[in-house]
Amino acid sequence: MNSLVKGFMVIGVSVTAKAAMRLLTLLLVAVFAVLSSSVSFADDERVKVVASFSILADIAEQVGGERVEVTSIVGVNGDTHVYRARPMDAKQITYADLLVINGLGFEGWIERLESSARFNGIKVVATNGIHLLHGNAEESVQVMPMGHIHQHGTIDPHAWHSLQNGMQYAKAIAQGLMTADPEHQDYYQQRLDDFLVRAEQLDQELHALVAQLPPERLRVITSHDAFAYLAVDYGFQFISVQGVSTESEVAAGDLSRLIREVRNTEAAAIFLENISDPRLMNQVAKETGASIGGTLYSGSLSEADGPAASYLELMRHNVTTLVAALSAP
Image (cartoon, rainbow, N blue to C red; front, side):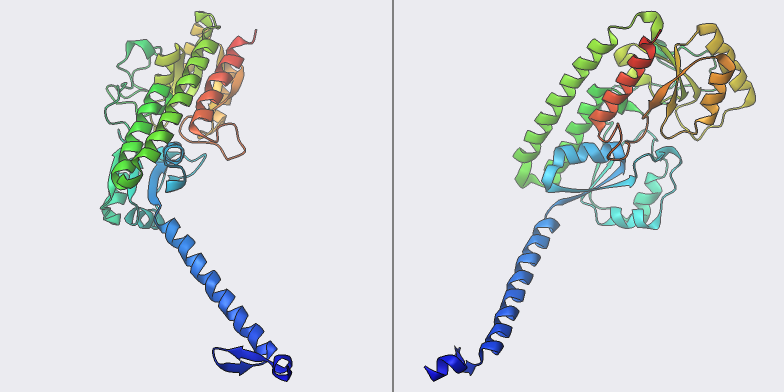
């Protein structure tokens, strides 16, 4: 009994109650460390995906779910056209299992970055195999007689503005994930199927919404030529100040011709873009008397609490913003 008061035996050694508590604490710390390392190991098993910009990053997360760790080189509200790559970007690509890019020259800096990173993983070019539009080649979107502002024959890289193309993007990314992580193909297929259903439903909803507008109310003005795919899918006509890249500068003569064009065509509204300086479009609105219809998301997502925090939300926001402005008397 006296020995129970003074202490007890642990592995054949008599210790005091205080010492026993110390030993128990150390054991608990050791167990916690083992459990923590197990969680970290599970995290390390996730497929490391680097996407060139936020729209692709979101689609990769939608398809990859808990099996992926996604990093976007160009963040939300960033302009991929003019992005300047950083050493940290090369490091991220070096350790990536999957690199997802848009292609078609949209990321003019990506090849140099890949080379410096010595990337040996799987590369997904999301636009492979889709129907492409050219900057000034499609009659259905040729509403601006200023050919020198557009680069003739230039492929328009903004293919995600068609939900049908966005679904092809998701399929390409899913295939890349299945190649990188073949043991979980069923998981990726299930998430891909869910994404495709939601995208198709949204496409039908937006078509029905636009169908309410009369044809003469479908002509709008934007700062750069990023919405040709949206125009083809839904029947809009976009008049743009700049070509397919925001890198091009607008000459005074081009701006004057645009103002005349806007006056002659009686465009219903002017729209700003989240990645472009609004001053130019505000000037056009002032000179022509056209109203500002809102802000469209052309090349990136918004912040998480914004109106275009995911790819599908971006598409919904752009079309509903257009329709709301064009429906106004």
